[in-house]
Length: 218
Image (cartoon, rainbow, N blue to C red; front, side, top):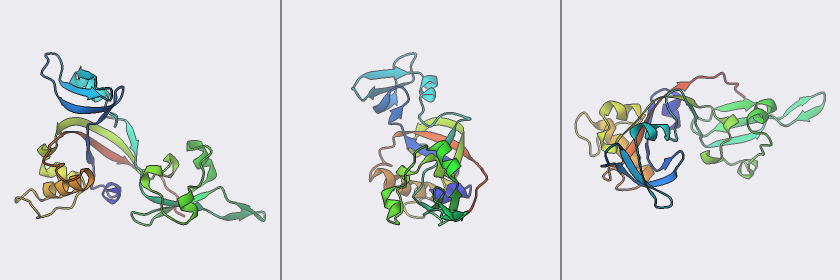
């Protein structure tokens, strides 16, 4: 969903609730029926926890309003060859982004300030793209500011929210006026597997706005 984020069509995201700050991986997340608590879950050691909604929001791994996130995407770094006084300065890097083939230039000083000791991935040395999971912070061109966080059941998504997820509408398995919801359902199951929509899990709903930063094109 890189391009919808870049062009402003994607302004929120839904994520499964499977990890909390201070608890790590969790499972069986559900409403609590204990007075004074709102949510319950098991941690990775199978211990049972019950917490308030306020504590849940504080433990959101995506932060809260005002916090910033940075996006990772499939990319291909390469040495930006330049010569000064007859010597090659090969520490600067160009990064090509697979989503739209855009290329950006990053000087050594920028790279070292965010990722000291960064080394060119072997895949990139072979001329291949590098998976998004391996993108270093300095190469990211997407910075987002969180504007809101809430919890809701997956199928409670509205047509307006589905549109804000950046998905394309589809008539497949769609009722009239819910074409974006149908598109989001298809995307959710592509990512989370068949049956993921029907499971109707509780999810994080994270709203954000993109922070625009000056970029240098190669």
